[in-house]
Image (cartoon, rainbow, N blue to C red):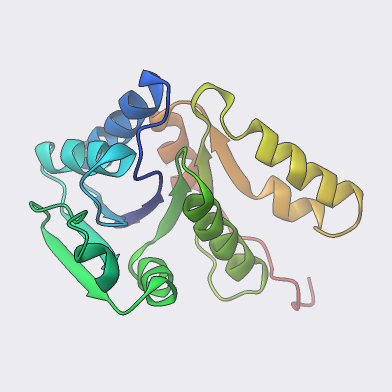
Length: 189
C-alpha cells in the first residue's frame, strides 16, 4: 500500500471523538510512510484528517469537484489538489489513486462513496481492501443493514466478511495491510 483513500464528513459531527479519531488516523497514515487521498475539503473530519497527515509529513492529495472549490471549501495547504468536473469524476479519481479505502464517520456522501467502492470490489473492478473506522459504534447500524441484506439474499456473506472493521486506527491499518481480496461475483470461485 502506498496511498489510503479516506471517505469522511466535511462536518465535524456532534462528538469530539469523531474529530480526534480522524486526526489520529491521519497521524497513523503519516507514521507508516503512506499517503492520503481524500475529498479535498478543509473543514470537518476531512480537515482534521488532512491537517494531521500533513503535520506528520504525509503527502496529501485532495480530489474536489469544481463546484465545491467555488464555495471555498477546498483545503488551501495540500500537497496536491485535483479539481475534477463533478462527483462521478471525483469518486473515480479517488478509487484510481487509492490502494485501500476507509470510511470514517460522515453523511450521505461518505456512504455513497463507501458503497460504490464496495460494489466495484464485488464486481471485480478492483481487488483493494475496504474498511470502516468504527468510532464509538458509528457504523454499527450500517453493518446491521448489510447483515440484513445478507440474511435476505441480496448480498453474499463473504462480501460482508470482507469489510475490515476496527475502532482503533492502528488496528485498522494493520488489518488492511494483511487483507486478501475475494473473488468477484462473476469469477468461477
